Length: 159
Image (tube, rainbow, N blue to C red; front, side, top):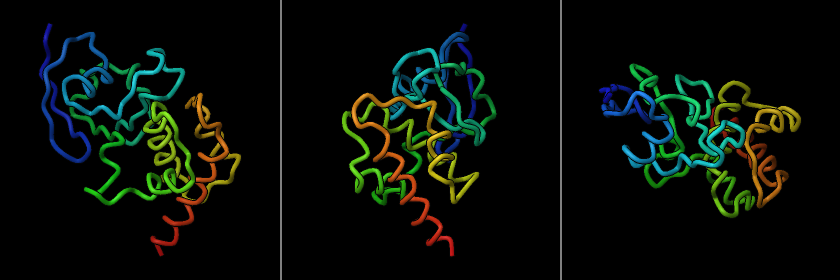
């Protein structure tokens, strides 16, 4: 059964039609063209499909598209301001905190969710907040350093 869903996605009002059993991950990728949402495991274990739903970090493979009705969805595509990268995106590049890119959008969204709640996290808090995201290429030290550096930049910009 097809359902019409109205939502706000990356700050813009959106409407889409989806099947009742279709995941939000599939809707975002296949119906709306938001390819930053990656399918890693399909079971919520890897974090590659991480998004923010009403400001809460979730694995979009575990959410039905219909559950986005009336809600706010944020993906990695909504982080930058046109060609101007978000500080997290910039610091991931500067610290070489990515390789193949499958996990990168999920890490960026998870780090953004963390920094919204805790703008000055410790290394331990960063590692804990990112524990739901798996990377098979880079290891985690460069990712943690990038988040720490982005937090400093964002805190400096906020003053």
